[in-house]
Amino acid sequence: MVLRLELDGCPNFRDFGGYRTAEDRRVKLGCFYRSGHLADLSESDVERVSALELTHIFDFRREFEQAHKPNHPNLLATVDNVVSLAITPGNQAGALDSLGEAGLSPDAAHQFMCDINVELARSHAPAFKQIFDVLLQQESPRVLVHCAA
Image (cartoon, rainbow, N blue to C red; front, side, top):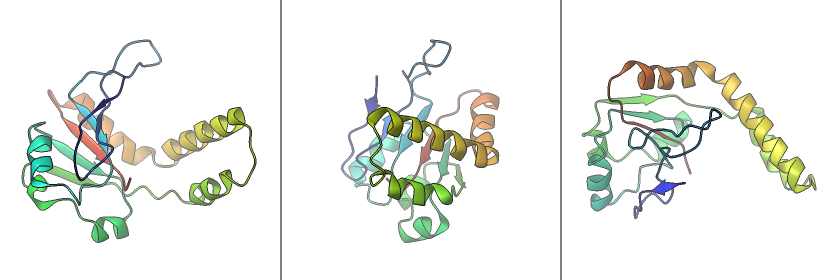
């Protein structure tokens, strides 16, 4: 189940709610969102996202990307906590570029992506911890995490 918020300026804005966990439970709706960058939101988009009453935005983009395509200022005015957590893919970027050239089977490509995401999570654990601390310690957090695309 993927719940997308249809926006003009951000084609992949979705609620993580509804996803199944390893324990066969479901992530709660309306508290944890994901999107691409927020630079090109229309005013209508800003109103729709503002209506979610976000408490935090965690921006995973590299500092260059944040400076090049800053978050929409009208949206930022509605969120008290905006945190830059630049996630630098490091050696994974080169690995992703070569993935298509490797001629891997679909199963091997799937395993490669699983492995690279585990490594990304491990290598950036302190950044991800900040997000989970907010989710676990606040009474009613509404968190958006976003990257470039």
